Length: 485
Image (cartoon, rainbow, N blue to C red; front, side):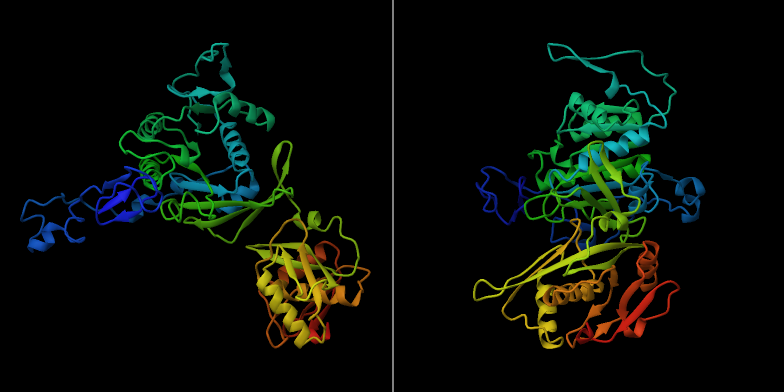
């Protein structure tokens, strides 16, 4: 088989030009392996012999009891220094893990990574033989760098190495200064080829290493351009092997491609131990950190941050932030969104206006547009609202995105409120799933949603009739169908 070193497109014959990416001279023959020569069947199996009798290609190894590898010292985690990030990770970084963080350009990935590196390195400082300390880098007019001050003692504990292929040492030091983060224990390493980086990390054995970004890594052994799928997989495989052998925790930064995937379609997700995604809208200050894959914890948790001049700050009370500027107006309701073990109260707004053109418009920000069309059809058919000639707009305040069906009832209530032009003088919580028959169905975590509403002073709630229950200090009403709205 032949494969392109730029886009990894495969072909059964050699081609001068890759038909997928259009690169000239990029199609090369795949490296032949014993298992690949012959349709994936090894020569030993085809001959019917075994490795011991025929001199084999491998040597037998002794297995070890799994119980010997489990101990309290192996279960200890490395805290990121941020409660929200530790929550998403399941308690912190697992030693020897390879973690990938991704997100849209400008969303704040490098800012968050720099904060984590500075927080980890502030506990203990480390000497480096090849890398340089960020706070000790000074610049000469000729552009050469020198290290100021004496090196730490050789027995000092090593902590963090920062490999940046997108920023120079000076730019990275300025970032730490802007974030008011201590970079004294952070060491900077030039973006050498990945083989050199692996050898350096293995020699210096830091507890934490950052590579920003994986698309900038190069190789001396693989003839491929930086960022190509073949090189990205090769470099990630070397780093994964290094992390498992040495116990170094490695954090990779991955840039999102045009189609929304990380370094190409599913190139790295199956290799790394955890995939963190930083979400948000550049027009809003809030950012959400999710774990789309986590071998050592849950993928249901979410961390909430606010982008400030000093970097990303954890939001301790998200519900109060999202409802801070809410005003009682037609089309405005409150719903509770469950994210893992947490519940966020958010404001949902709706605007209904007579269609200016023949076809009515259904637009949603922070909510699925197709589901909004379905709910509008349910309100027209089961709820008695005439929406056939009305434009319907729905917006979730704060740049958040409601993904669970529990927000259906809040969307219907907001649209109904906008149509009638009425608004409740005090906030009311709406939670429930709406079926095609107009029935309001039960939802999970109802107790948590009611408790969060009560904590913020909301005394009224509308929930599914079959799940309605009495709560001290709250007036909880049950709703059987949307016609009762």
